[in-house]
Image (tube, rainbow, N blue to C red; front, top):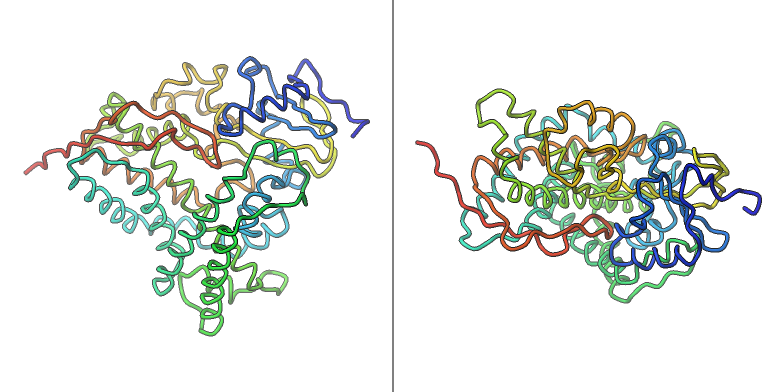
Length: 443
């Protein structure tokens, strides 16, 4: 690394070791605070501790180079694998390229466009059931837990056969508990530690993982002992062969069950939570959506969803490790460097978005938004080969939620609106709580 220049000062901001430590400490409780405000808008940021470098990519050509063209070089980060690997193992969310490619080949058919579109009625019914509960409540509604259960219900029904649905839900509860334990010792300073650094696991985390392993082992054994089950992802992983004739091991199937659950509903639940806040806090934008049965309604709903995901991207940062020396626009990148894309700051960049903190779905009618999407400045679902495999399902779910919500409720925010905080995902500083007034049903 000693022969690798740190940066080209004309295209990036170099941040010294003391300021890097300060930035990482600020980011301990809120990852959005990693970049110093004065450095934003001046290109990529390069932090350093000793011989280890951390890059925060803000230049669109470098974002695309890392996430699209650089996929073989830029691998899933050791930090993510360190904090999630103890629970989730090595699956599509956490795995590096070769393992990810093997698993994706078996799982991708479950996310075919026709299959996702065929789930519309199921999604609509689950959204309606949640809104029915809200309509029956007379007190303000804290929506977070219901959004989580809604999103989990969708992914469980979409991927798993009914005979194992209850067991899968039990797994998800245990995984949530285990990940909450990892969050207690998660610290942004550990981002700079090399892979293989010793990990500290609590007794509670180990017990949750032990229970998860036992339930997964029972599900996998049941599927191996029976003929293939249609429309069940575990059965597909157990019985189907890869192109090279090999099959997934029990451990690989176990890891993928957990990865599909975590990536399949956690971020969508966050997106629903933030979308609910926007529906309550932005009445003018809601009124701009045409009523049911009129032209342009679905396009307006999609723009509302896009703007909610721009302002509040659930995956607010994407991290990779450079596994070989390479070059970005602001200079060389050495093997072992950490590269992060701040999705949140890309979505709020004043040189791209006019008045970026203002909620305005109409901006997605402009060439600015089209250019931002083409350049990699709007990436709520990631970019490149490892972008979100469940994007279409998430979009159907969020649009169904918006459509039914505006038809049924007049809404306001109960109390001051929360602000976004960067943790594992983008979460509200306090629970999103809505004051709902059901609309009169036309005769």
